Length: 262
Length: 289
Image (cartoon, rainbow over the protein chains, first blue to last red):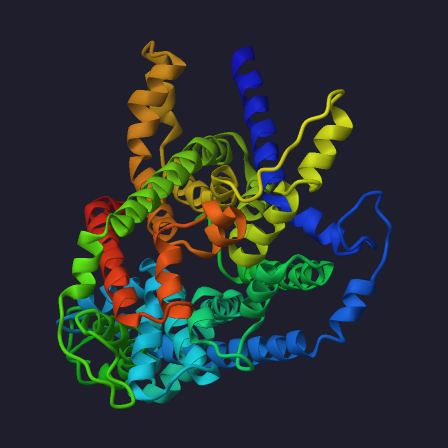
């Protein structure tokens, strides 16, 4: 089947083209962050000045620390609360369980523009206002459904007989959970945690509506900088962000298969 | 244990409650109450803050229906969503097919990961990277003029095509992912059976492969269409003055004009549109599981 072979090679070539489309702008941005010309002029002249000048930019550094802190706290809270909820949804049968599971989808499916503006209105109304606390409240809520979905997927592979066996051997509920169930679902919990970190660290829209000058995150700071004008400094910090978030996802992929390989 | 119905799973909400409550309380405070508050505020004349006077009104919704600006913008956002979704199908579906049916083993795994990896990196930064490529004197301009013998001016920046390119780049991995999942579930023997019964390649594609992968196509379309209709950052950065859409108008109400009740009403109308679309797609999404 010569035609089949030709078509297969056309297909492979096409996928390479798609990868080019996906990665080219990112690679160009990264390359320009090492280019000496502030107006992105060619020929290319190597420099790391833009990365050095990032260190002088106190505003960006403060926003970076905020982003990291919020992402870590979001990860801790949403992983613990999310794993607890997944366990309950796995272990117990009760009326309204389907409703609770369905309620996980609004935070994922509703555009962040709507969720973000709704949070802004509500937090203002109840006196929380804007700022880092509001951003944290929002990020945990956005990350929770991801954690619950990922941990629940891992729990599907857990044999309930193991819990039964431990219980019949005299372990109490706490021991069963800590010694039997948790070790088994740990890859799921770690993957969920990495997801949560990525959701928070890359979150822009919700943070944008909830931030105030001085209490802001890195993506919000970058957006403000882009709207003021292009500088290679933004390229440098953007390159760092993209490397960090891609590395995080590669790490997550080690713990959690997206593809459902046969 | 007394319950023999299912090993390990037990009945009753009471023992589950302590495990469930923290997560769902958090979701209530940060998602469900805010969404309800937004509906409430959309019927007010002003924010009930700092002793400001307010009354109930339908004026914010009347503004949407009486000024053609808002409905025009909503329509152009819906059109944008439709166009981006179509491009994602055209670009993403063949790639999903190659991944599912042509590539095997490790190379499939590696390329699959490469396709969905950018999707999980910062969307804002990726849109910004397109701004560098598309602007006049940018990379595309320079590269084409270096290769081509004649002089052309590529200045796609701040145009409708730029917004489309940026959004398709952002969302095409979704389409590849959902279509790949349904395509790889199609048994190869079905395709072979069709071929051996005398169907042409094209007939197999339209009568077997596309109908069987429809759930993935629709799931992908819903997952792309909904956020694109509500997009504001991408049109702002890549569209400039031509990048005024429904999402950017909502953004303005909250960060520039400070007419929050109108913003809430506009958001709620968008939410209603989104929910209708999701409800239409839901039966298919559920089957795609």
